[in-house]
Amino acid sequence: MRKVLLTLAVLAGLGLAGAAAVVGFGLYNVSAQVGHLPGVSWVLHTTFRNSVRLRAPAPDEVPPLDDPDLIALGAGHYATACVDCHGALGQPRSATVRAMVPVPPPIDEAVAHWRPNELHWIVENGVKMSGMPAWPVQDRGDEVWAVVAYLVSVQEGASPEIPSPDLAGLDYCQSCHGRIGGPVPRLDILSEAYIGTQLDAYLTGLRPSGIMAQAASRVPQARFDELARAFVTQSGPAGAGAGPDLGDIASTEERETGAELARLGTRDVPACLACHGGEPAREAAKGPRLFGQSRAYLAAQLELWRDGVYSHDDLMAAAARDLSDADIAAVSAFFAAADP
Ligand code: HEC
Ligand code: HEC
Ligand code: HEC
Image 1 (cartoon, rainbow, N blue to C red):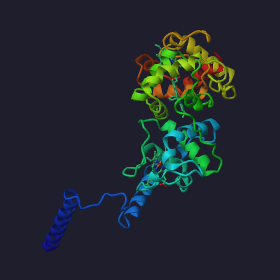
Image 2: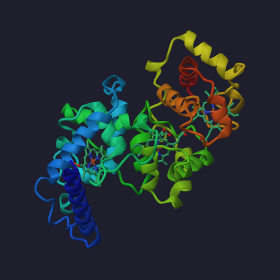
Image 3: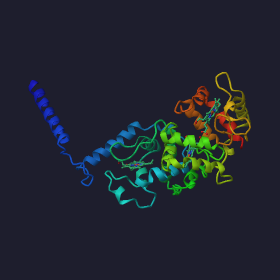
Image 4: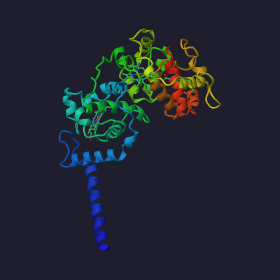
């Protein structure tokens, strides 16, 4: 028995010395031109596959993914965050990307063999030592679903065209804000100062959003003020988002409950209108205008405030802390129903 243990110890020591030599003397060739040793690619990919399967969210956590607005938002993010590596359907990718090890699979291959919950895990977490990046901010699994919705539409052969806007112009912002409703807010109803502050907050991560961090990092910061002004001075359809989704508005009763909360508040929740403006047409006093945003957007933002994902404004964080799910549904319905 002692002999066996001694032999094992010597072997372990030799193994460690060998590994130290490989690391210390640079014996392992890291050249991507040489590729992996035989078997290594298989080991890495099998580890990747099983690791995703183990950690992906449960299938019943997958929200409905067939909303055209959600798919369009995912396609809009894909257009600048993913397309360089995975390409657009049927489009060639650069020779340089194709020289990556491992090479990023083209979009149709990348989505094959994965379920929506697994795609969510991959896009949120990325893949270590492969070039596949993680979502740029933490705790925004909610917005990753937009990208998953787009990837599933590719799987089903029903994906929309990926936009290819000119990044230098307002066009780029409008490819989402001027075209998509639901989860994308309107900007034409906001003030110039508020838009500018939000862009800075997205860029620095103070207001965590992977989608807007990406968008804000694609334009020079020196242009933020000019962009903010452009949204405010634009009128008509070019400046507007898709507007309130009236089809999604709740019952009159729910809206009235929301109106009461917004006007009067409760023991635990302050009146929203104290800060967010009383008359639809009046500029909000301390917070941004909410009348006219979509119900989906308002509800999603309120959950982020309530759950502590957002903490960049103490007053708003305190206002949302005690909201119930029913409060959020009702107050979002109230603000969404009134067109500014
Ligand atoms: C810098 C290049 C790069 C970018 C940008 C990138 N990926 Fe990837 N992606 C990769 C690489 C490389 C892999 C392969 C990982 C592996 O096989 O180990 C991969 C793998 C994947 C996979 C799993 C495919 C499979 O079975 O191997 C999916 C799905 C995916 N990426 C989606 C996306 C999405 C969506 C985005 C944008 C949010 C994105 N990727 C951005 C490089 C990239
Ligand atoms: C890929 C789609 C997309 C693009 C492109 C995009 N946005 Fe956004 N934008 C969003 C989404 C989604 C949100 C909500 C993010 C969140 O959860 O905070 C948002 C939020 C905002 C907000 C905050 C609005 C509010 O009510 O608080 C501002 C301001 C904004 N975007 C400005 C811009 C500007 C300026 C550009 C162009 C440089 C731009 N966006 C490009 C999707 C996009
Ligand atoms: C004490 C003032 C105050 C009160 C009360 C208040 N808010 Fe806010 N709210 C703000 C401020 C300030 C912001 C902007 C924070 C930032 O992003 O800089 C904000 C942001 C928001 C946003 C995000 C808007 C957007 O366009 O992204 C929503 C939604 C919101 N508030 C809803 C509510 C609701 C609903 C209530 C009532 C339950 C409420 N607020 C009460 C000050 C307040």
